[in-house]
Image: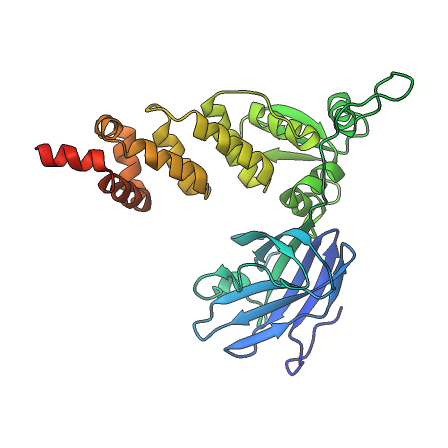
Length: 343
C-alpha cells in the first residue's frame, strides 16, 4: 500500500497483515491530534485503530469494534517498532469484551509511551510504526468423558491434543530452552496465546526459522507451560515452581494459567515464601496474591520475624510501593496497635 502524502486526511495506514497482527504506519502531522485508520476485518468483525497524541506528545492507542456484536472477548497488544523493524520494549496488553455498548478497549486511551517517541529510535520521515496483535478468544468448555451406546468411551479433544504433544507428529516448530529441545505446533500455540501469535505469525517473523531459542526460562517450566496450552492442566508442584510458572504465564498472556498459579501461591504463603511472592505479585500485577501476602506479612508476629530477614529488607528498599502498602496494612491492624501501646 502506498504511503499517503503529507496532506492526506487519514494519516494512519495498514502496511502489513499477517494472521492476527497488523502493522500500522502513523503520521505525526501536528499536536494535538486524534486520527483513525481505515476499517479492517479480522475474526469476522470490522475494526478500526485510533491514535491520540496530546500537547505533551504522549501517544495513546485504542481499538474500536465497528461491527454490531453481543460479546467479542479479545486480547489486544500494541507494540512500537524500531526503525530497523525490531520489536520495542514499549508495549501494552489488555483483554476486553467488546459489544455494541462497549465498542472501545476498557482503557479509554491506551498509553504506549509516556513521554515522546524518541525520534532517533522510532520516527522515520515523520511517521512511526505500531504492531497491533489481536487474539479473539472462543468460548471453551472442558470435555468430560462420556460413553456411547456401545459402552466405549467417546473421543476427547483434550486427550487428543495431549497425545499430539507427546507424539511430536506434524510438529512445525521447535524451542530450545535451557539446553533442551521441545517440539510443538504453531497453530495450537497461536490459538492459545496472543504473544505466540505475534512471535510465530507476525510480520517480523523469519519464515525459515523453525528452532527458537528462549532465554530466561527453565526447561521444566516451559514443559509445563506447553502441557497447559495443549491440555488445560498443570502438575501439582511446589511454591518455587509455581512462581516461575506464573512468570511464564504472564510472559505469554495465558491468563487462565496465571490465575491457577496465583491461587496456588495464595494457598501456600509462609514466612519462607511471602517475601518472594510479594515481589512477584507487584512485578506481574497479581492483585489477589498481593492482598493475601500483605495480610499475612502485616500480622505482628509475622512482621517482627520478617524484619530480621535480609530478603525482606532488600524488597522494602527496592519496591517502595510494596513497602508503603505493607506499612499501611500493618498500621491498620488492631493487634499491631496493641503492641505499640504496650510499649
